[in-house]
Image 1 (cartoon, one colour):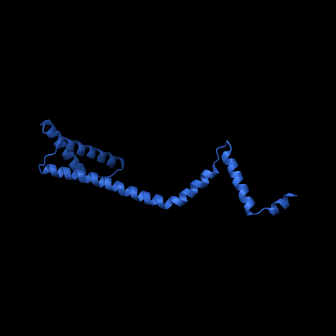
Image 2 (tube, one colour):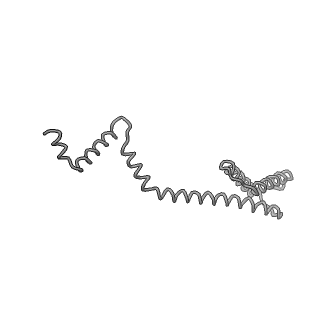
Image 3 (cartoon, one colour):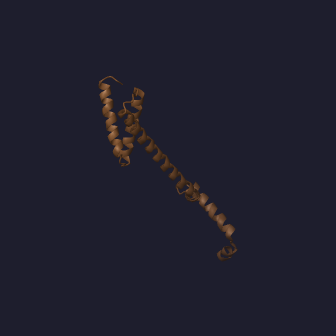
Length: 136
């Protein structure tokens, strides 16, 4: 049988089987070519692209909720302090840790915090004053 006769008898099934065997041999070989990983990775990205977009949207919503919750907690606490509401030491520690987390986030992500910054400074100054007077 000549080479031309062999080529003429090949059909798509033989070609596909030959490619699969070749790719498997390449995968097993000590040379780190991983065609299956590349093919399956590409296929996985195509299948999961919609899910990734939904996950990114959900992450953004959670991040926005986190920011708004921290911001609201700081503003509410400052308003309560201005209204002469008493807060215990645990509440002070909690709001100061929230303010620290919020400031770190704002600095890291270049988020302007405007009024929250002023209220945080007010709360910290009041905390220092009350601590000096041993009222906390």
